[in-house]
Image (cartoon, rainbow, N blue to C red; front, side, top):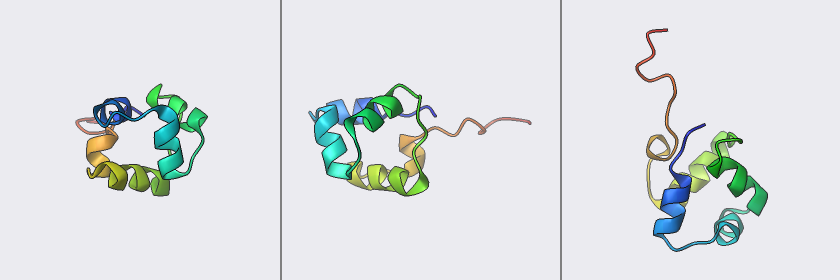
Length: 69
């Protein structure tokens, strides 16, 4: 799932390990999310959004918006 996690993390001057510790996940989880290879659970998405003070929708991009589908 596309996200701006890396940008928010770097803007705060955090390492992947520091962010992982803050939200109680592994560094590998942060790496995978930043590489768009792992979709977080809803509770994890909310923890990340709360940590950065943004809405979940501003952190993770909905691939179905604008889809006539």
